[in-house]
Structures are given as C-alpha cells and as structure tokens.
Image (cartoon, rainbow, N blue to C red; front, top):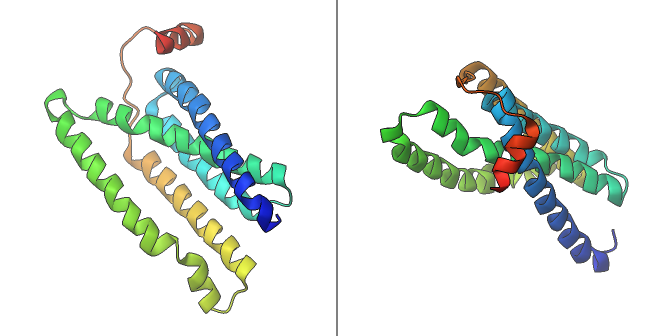
Length: 178
C-alpha cells in the first residue's frame, strides 16, 4: 500500500472493524441466550485466532479487510460475553467485586500487550528473521495464544443453563432494541 494511501485505508479498516463489532455483538448476545455464553466466548477466541493467523497471508486490500473483519467478529463475541459470564457465574451480592476484578485484569492486560506482544516482531528480527517473517510469526503467536485461551475456557467454564423458555431469534432481536 503506498504510504500516501495508508492513512485512508487505516481509517476505513477501523470503520469496518467498528461496524463488524456493532453488528456481531448484537448477534452474539442473542445467540448466547440460545446456545450459551461459553460457546460464544470460545467461538470469539477462535475467530480472533483465525483472523490473526490469516492476516499475514493477505495479498490484497479486500483480504486485509476480510481477515481484520474476522478478528473483529471474534472481538465482538469476547467483549459481549465478558459481563454476561460474570452475571451467570457470580452471586448477585458479589457482582460489583467481580466487575472490579475484571476491570483491573483488563487494565493490566494493556501493559502486557505493550511490553510483551507489541515488541514480538523486534524479538524475531533480533533472532535473525526478516521483517516480513518476524511480523508473520508475531501474528501466529498471538493466534496461538487466542486458541490457548479458547481451550482454557472450554475446560474451565461450564455452560450455565437457565431454566427459561427459549425465545425465538426474532423475539430476542426485538427485545434487544426495546
């Protein structure tokens, strides 16, 4: 991508990401009511892994957008399930504490990303890999991390089934806009 066009494409990429998140978070919430929060959270991490894994293979602008959209869909599923999982697992009187712990863990994740994940390409370059290979290996490592988290969720979360009537997709959609 010519450097003169990179800012424009970057803006479009972010707009696409936000659109995908807005659309998918609604669908993820509705679907989670039908198939479970655990399943949607795991799907989210798998989509994130697929998007990150494919990104280094992008050979065109549409592929970049597509792979970024896959990762954004995963992000939406994960984000949408974070608070609903707390609601399902934690006693009502402890939800505030659980939300605070969640917020602290999210805040702590930013330095980890900045200190550990962001410099990965430089680590690979220092190990003798070229710039493109170092970038690709970094994406692969992050994809593997996302799959690892999906596996941990698979083992560690139980689907909390509520004894409620299963509403139709359309009804759940209408309630979401109410």
